[in-house]
Image (tube, rainbow, N blue to C red; front, side, top):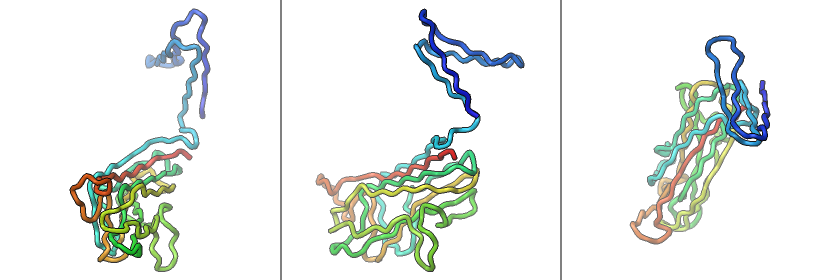
Length: 216
C-alpha cells in the first residue's frame, strides 16, 4: 500500500522533520530540504511498472565463430535475481559491428538467448525466443548477410524482449550465435580481416546487454 504526504514550507523557510510514532526506542527522523514543496512517496511494494533493478554487461573485444551449431558469444551473459516471482525482465541487446563474411549477401546467422534459473541448466524455452514449432530453431532473430565484403561490417544491430521467469532465484541469460555456413564466419565488434588501419570500416565497436526487473 502506498502513502503520499505533501508538505508546504512556511513563509519563513527552514527544513521539516518527521518522526515516526514512539512505539519503541527505535525512533526514525526524516528531514526534508528547505523547498517550497516536498512530496514523499513511501511504499512496501513497488508500484506496477517501476524499474526495480538494472544489470548490464559490456563486451568490447572482437569475436569470431565458424560454428554451425549454436555457440556462446564469449563474455555476453548476465544474471539478475527478481524480487518477486510475478515481475518481468526486460532484456536489451545492442551489437556493434556484426555480420557474416561473404560477398554475395547470401549467408547469415541465427541469434538466440538461453536462460538458466537457479542453476537448473540453460534452455531456449523463454519469451526472448520464438515459440516451439516442430524441428525449427527457437531464435531471437535471424541475421541476414549484412557484410558485402570482408571489411565492411555494419553496426547498430539490436533486439529486445520481455521475459517472465516466474521465480525469485537467480536468472542468467546468455547470447548464442550459429553461422549458416562454416565457410562464412560470424564476426562481432570488428571486421573479418581485422586490419589495423585508420579507416572507419576498421574500427572497433562494442556489444552490451541490459536486464531490468519490472514490477507487476
